Length: 441
Image (cartoon, one colour):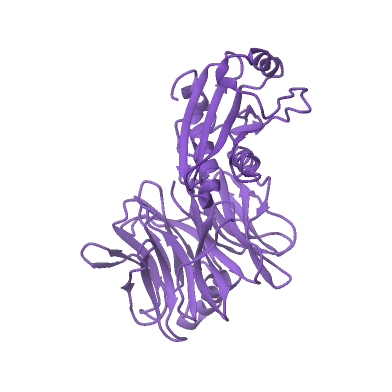
């Protein structure tokens, strides 16, 4: 492929993507089984939370956020206690031991755990006491107190949800993770960060032009992204979220795009057109040493690290159209992964290492999300319907993906389960939100 023939690939994958785009009580067994596709979710009941001089509706709001977090976790199902005939009013006090009939009702209806809490005000802070009980034995499994400003109410609920996930799986929960993305702002594209459920969006950059394809550092303290200083020069920058301190990592001639940090944070993989066509390089962030990995008269871009850091998956049109390839981290052992379809791009390796998500063109000619195993033996399409689906990014537990989808000229960020179920829109307002990246836990 000649130098100018990479332009259509870059136009979609970069600009298109940017603009469109406990371990006790059997918990270890739960941990082992939770990765199975036929894993049976754990029924949990969330009781009405008690309010003690707390702001209006604070107890109800915490309970609702908690329910949503538990549902999204894919570890639990939230039982409808009213439909099960389990009636509990706000006045109950589980700690007094007078509610044993309640636990019998729960056990009789298959509810494995009951969650209850109290909201109170202390000085200027909210106090949440959260409790989790075994539905059969009434044993207290979790008892935690969270204290914070009223603005942290949702964070308290998220922390309690993550406690449950950790208790039953031995893994961190995702309720306190974040999503970075690019969004319209006064005619430009700026980097934003929001909670995993779409709440509390916060603008990170304010350049007035184009900042695209943000990716997280493994410690969650920084983001790397492509910064378009003008229409000719693009750099890859790093910004510290706590301080706003920013520095340029890559400023080679031409396009410098699709950055991806290695699992240990030492190496940055990216694509650059400094050689005339788009090639993949790595940068040692300690020594600033560059290493070129691909040597093709074709377009190679969108590198993404394997969880082990020993391999990279990337997009190349060396076979005539964009397809997914694998190679070792030093550029050796290159092999093609996708063969079905004439367009496969923007790969993202699952944190569990079992799947690679990517943008595929369906038989109907639509850009959708597909999954493929790293050995290429299994492939499936997980999104359908109208719109251009783009920029898949995995949750740190490997059970969900976030992506952007453009319909009728508007692009928004969506969450979806790995099996293609329970798609949920996260962004609202504006006309363009794209290039999502899910933080580590």
